[in-house]
Image (cartoon, rainbow, N blue to C red; front, side):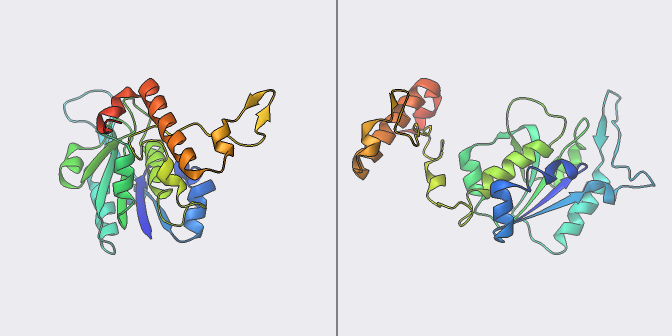
Length: 230
């Protein structure tokens, strides 16, 4: 089982994306356990403050170190974490290899930034891995965290009905996935490639690999540097 604790100022923003479809199935099977922690529970005063103005001036509020420290300390009382991850645009860009690696762990913390960002001392003293989902800025780290959890959770054994299907996703072997087809085999004269109807597993496997190569060369040639010459 993989346990993921998510620290956020907007837990309600994560309830829907993590409460349906494959993630819901993973939780119901006891394969993935997700806990949402409202950082405001560790804030001060009647407004449960977790942010303040930045030193040196400038626009935007900054998430304070004290509530984050107190929350992480509380979580660590009962759990030893493999990684404490911060979702940030300037982190390492998420790819399939990172998802594969994280899916092998047992306990993760994900910290969702908000406002102008987090006090740099949090990154220096608590965070062990920083991850971005792309070169753009979101209003907060919650949607990025949902993307990360989904990419990890679907890889856990027993989550997908067909456990081999994740092995054929795009990027698993540095290639894009091949085209896929379903019934009917002929629709308005548009036919499914005959090899897929042949029942010849070896021929189908070869066809899919060649189509993956072709699609990758056309759409993402940068990926082919990691693929041996064929």
